[in-house]
Length: 347
Ligand code: KG4
Ligand code: ZN
Image (cartoon, rainbow, N blue to C red):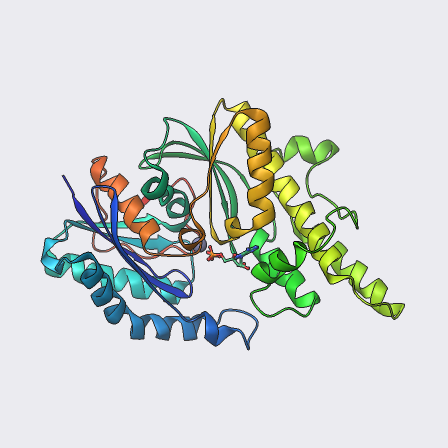
């Protein structure tokens, strides 16, 4: 039995380190370099990599102290092996390999996207036998059918262009909001009318709906917002930012929710688990709750601190794979920036 799992997440700009013992979260510490990116309007991988190097040992020490354990008590090490940015991923995987070698414990190079779903079991308990996972973040929007989080996942669909969070960040720029725009649009939209402007819903009609039943596309709605803003500016009119934010949010969340619940119905799943930074979005949460009540589906969304990137999600997934008897990763694994969703452990 692998009781105590160390989880390491460095795929983007958060250095996250956590410890899980028998499915219970003992510690979860995160250092972020996000503040350094506000002035660039996006993440600079080299700066994020350097920040991981600086933060790694202090974050590890803080996590061990918070958990009240020492390194030699750790039974297995889980680390994000992809998808993500190559430099940041390499730093986490290198550190994890060094720890696995020094402690002579198994290493599990795991999937970041699956981690966004796995973390929910720390909060809401064991998963049902089969359920649908919706992962929505700055880099990813995927619908997954999950039979066993440790070994059996099928990707039903994903975004063909922008991820939901990415589209929010781009519209944030159009509306002159600070980076990242997602949380600012969320706040603004709470004061606006979601029906004020009719923005398009990607892949939701006719042939597209049939051939891309579970796929998403958010670049069309983003472009529609850009045209709308340009039109108002050309006429010298003031931007109704709250209405634009609310109508845009509604267009994105409507499609996310619609397709996720359609997947639940088609595949006979009574549980939908939502994860990823975008699942912090208040409109998504409200719309999902409403649809869930109508359809008798249970929606599980972890608290916001577990939706953005963190170490707990990787420790949680490491705990599932280690205790399902999955073969661990050899010490010569590399990182995979485009790791497929079906690959839960890299070997
Ligand atoms: O999962 P995450 O921390 O990083 C990635 O793996 O991408 O997600 C970050 C994304 C950003 O695009 C951010 O704007 C978005 O999640 N986000 C939100 C909200 N909070 C974070 N988007 C909409 N509404 C929010 N409340
Ligand atoms: Zn993420």
